[in-house]
Image (cartoon, rainbow, N blue to C red):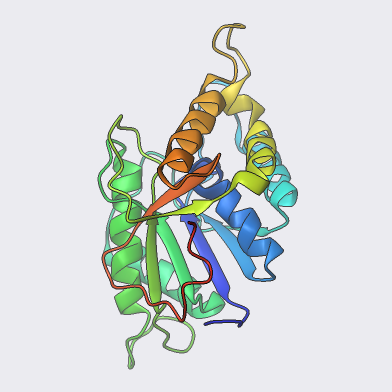
Length: 234
């Protein structure tokens, strides 16, 4: 895909997962001219200080901050389950957008929704290519699958590569700050925004691993190919 404009689909179990994990990379992809769509599997509600209307406004504000578009898949928060119907619903979305690169959550997590979304998305990738099926759209197989880290576990991420987001860390933080109901509302001064501060710390840690101020980590199982070494961080 060297030099070509790519379709990129970033799937999140809930609004804010994509920005938490890879908001900087999303911004960099958009700045490079790629077509980026954030797919929210659920609306994220109920939460202590949110509502469907509030979360929708926040999610759209975050997408606008990053300059990308957003779509809902219509699954129910806290009830996402791996099933044939779920796989085919997501496969139809793949056929609609035909992503060259697909980002989904890392498969080790404490949140059942995250685990189910990963499994659904992996299987839907296979289902989307099937012929003689009742899945809407023309068969398509997303060629690249990359996992991001947005887990409910305090674990050491087994990252395979990192993206330098030093130039866009402020945009990532601005996008996260759109989610007032999730990170600020109802919290005392000592805890308001602490999740965003933690995300910045993680970005600083992974930045240090590649000798840059900030970076976002990713995991792959399939081999990635390079056409050259020009973009390696030295």
